[in-house]
Amino acid sequence: MTRPNLVRRKYHERLVLDIMEKSDAREDFRADVELGLSSSPKSIPPKYFYDEQGSRLFEQITRLEAYYPTRTEASILSDHGLEVIDAMGEAVTIVELGSGSSTKTRLLLDILAHRQQRVDYIPIDISPTVVTRFGEQLLADYPMLHIRGLICDYHQALDALKEEPGQRRLFLFLGSSLGNYHPHQATELLQEVRAAMADHDRLLLGLDLKKDPEVLHLAYNDPEGVTAAFNLNLLERINRELEGRFELERFAHKALYNLEEGRIEMYLESMMHQLIPIKAMERSFTFRQGETIHTENSYKFDRQRLENILGQCDLKIERQFLDHRQWFSVNLIAPL
Image 1 (cartoon, rainbow, N blue to C red):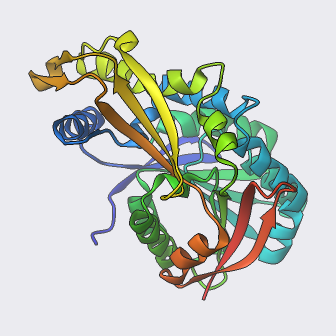
Image 2 (cartoon, rainbow, N blue to C red):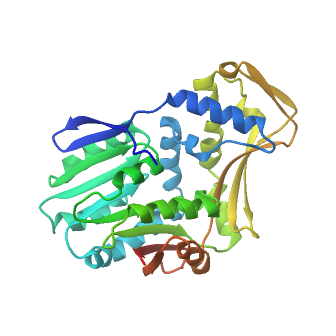
């Protein structure tokens, strides 16, 4: 693979971004939406949830009573973060896939702040705005922190991190984000993480666990309707950025638990027969009543599912931390 072409921009004495020179993001969005809406069944990749409005809505979701994953994972990190850092041993660099607001990362930075005169943090995100906004907040709170953001996709970032000299690195992949990948895609991604890791590096992997389907159903169908707004925002984004003509009241949020596959499936369901023009594509798309756009899967794990994937990636569970209900796991993963 050709090493990614990253251009460095300095935003602060302790904040630099290495930004991937890439094609127009709007064109990528247009191409992926056109392909997805032309397919049968229709689908749109979940990465497009997270524009500015979508990110705000997701932050609201994480604070809902029904949505347990964020606060449960945070409680595990609060209870066991010291054990994680102790297991790393010497000075630690934090590398985070999908940094977002870095809220849970702070639980580890609080520990490192008392141990290291300098802490290096490498957030990976496709949005420079997210990294700079939250990065500046982190710099204000942690005077010893130095941030090097990688503004690109995970594949490009992990390729850039291969064989970099330096201290021990703790790769973070939290929020059960791995569950958004089909198992074969999850395996491929973890294989790339492993290829970027030295033998002394570790991966801290947060995963939502299989549980009562009623608990899962409520988490993705909250009575406040925030998850519905988050899902429907995908159509609003098409309207805003691609001049689509989706009328949101003609679509409904739908989330169900597929017991056989062990995953939540999210859809946008057309409430009537309709024809939707999208000006940026110079074409229209037909929807039958009841036809859906698949927007996300969220796989739930047990130890066997995790070990099956890790076994294909030259990785192993070194430590596993659970909450008292055993609803969520945080796993310290080591190279074999």
